[in-house]
Image 1 (cartoon, rainbow, N blue to C red):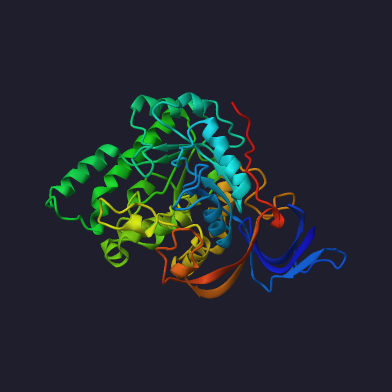
Image 2: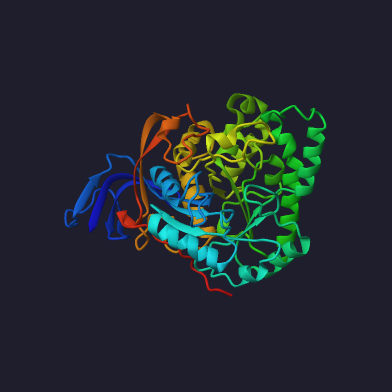
Length: 442
């Protein structure tokens, strides 16, 4: 089927212009400025009425919880439906599922489930353990975005704490190594210090979470990962930066493609900050790494503009409300975010001086495609897959009952955004497919 989208405000390649897009089947056939020629014959024409036409968001960091057998918290069907509602057309799911995605068999099981259930395009990281190095070496990196390495304990118990294994991975893997960088030694030390301030019967309040998962844990692990990458030449992608100290390790540069080390943060680190927010939102804002001070939030905001941060991803984690009950040691860490990340980031363009819609598109669509060598996605270009989002500049308040994720809640309940996703096309409205990467396996 041939479709014509016209009278659209197209944002692509750091440009914004009024124009049209012709979609033929799965692919973009033509992109033009101004009005389309009357000679263009289409089976379906849609007047965008000046609304934004953006490339679909590529969320390179989600936890959909489904290893192939489903999950009460959420599965590929429910969480990809939330992604679709939020303008996310491609996601990379993390390996800390049941079963964990740490070998070929688990990867194939998860891929088969996505082929049946996913509403948007998908790819799955291989997870590192202390003993599966050969599985990582043998991975098919034309289908796998990279290796996920937990250098700090989190949901799923996939901590890699054998230093020789970590060094081996950095030396031997030639594709992106996505690192959760928190020093477990520093976390263990900080936890003991905080627990000593309370009796055994007392529940440690949520606002002590950043004391239990302190900034030094992030800084020390990030520094270790950076040093290893520089020593070995590994392609390092540092996940969910949460401190000013981490971004200060990098120089401003908007050329993500030339970087050996790239970085990510998440909308919640750009929106929340300080213990007042823990007091206000409680366990809804408890995540790993922890949300820290407003000064960290402010520096992260500067870093997404000047290129010290390259990617915005959500770290989407749909815990059930019952999982979020309790204090700093009991309540689960993580929050859902994939449905609202694009409207929230577009709304921040009004609040953050220097942040433009064009830069948001770079951070959420262009840069993920470039950093991970994704085949023909992330741009509005002829010959590319027609992953397209229509966004209207319109005030909209977020409510828990809007949430498509199975968990049924969001930390952004009560927030009002200036933008709303109207419609999302995946492969031109065709069936979702497995994401491919333009690489040769070494």
